[in-house]
Length: 71
Image 1 (cartoon, rainbow, N blue to C red):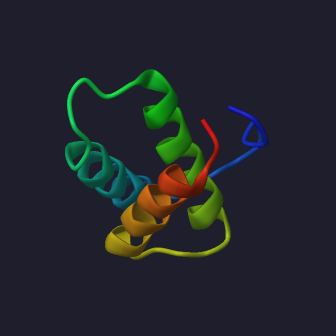
Image 2 (image 1 turned 60 degrees about the vertical axis):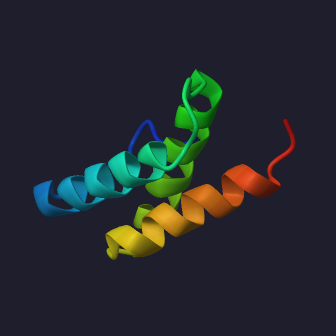
């Protein structure tokens, strides 16, 4: 993943990001592509790195970016 080689998060933030990731992926129709999973993960990482800690907000941001990003 780009731009996250030196990212560091406390355990509670990692748990929040996992919750957001699981929620976002669960909303997608199966089969979920690896590109979609990577896009969601990158958005969650980037948004959490900017200080967001609400799992629902992280999930929404990831899904919104997935919708508007070119494929």
